[in-house]
Length: 281
Figure 1 (cartoon, one colour):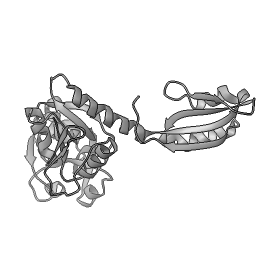
Figure 2: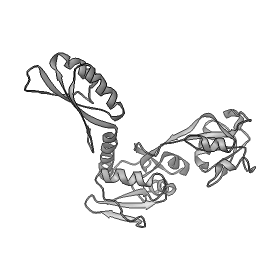
Figure 3: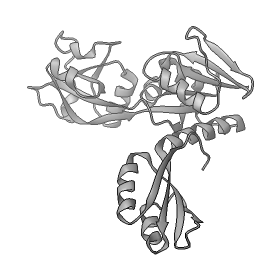
Figure 4: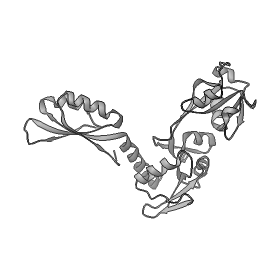
């Protein structure tokens, strides 16, 4: 039976359960449940702290898990990414008092406070920077004011919290993270894990795309197909009107309205958009 780790709380938990349900797997209805057996799909789900998931998977106790790229790197576990899942995005940046105007090289010899010491230490090592990494579990923004650190490395979204603490972002992002499916490093992926990958990939793709249907005169078909090339090519079907055809193609969800505007401008009519709930491509 395939054993899969799922975040039991935090920003990744709800979205992880949602994508697994969309992929056809049974999920817990009671947040107090620690284990759920999906007998129909021959999978056991273990609900664990997000920070621990990479450790369990890397040690081989579990075959796969969903966690953040940041947590995977920070753990130092012998686990690797199988698939990006398109949710849980976050960006890690350095920040220091606005008056300091640090550059990356000037971090050397300084104290860097973070809740992700493994991730930050790895980044500093890769840039040959020697600094003292101070591990904190929370409220990292206060560490400089309280004299614990000279600068911080933390998740940044709008930057409002940093500005309120008198801090300013500098340098390039340390890491751009998101939710990922992981497995133990260096092993051959077994068939049941491959099924999990295909199912989740199908949901990820379905969320990115929609199906677009429209009618177009044959004389404008070539122009329309340039606008909607599809993944391989659009599907074209005859209509009762001899000079018209029906076209179906997958288009990126974020580009839907622009594509519809362009199709209308070249004479397409009866333009319809349909959600895709799952697919195999």
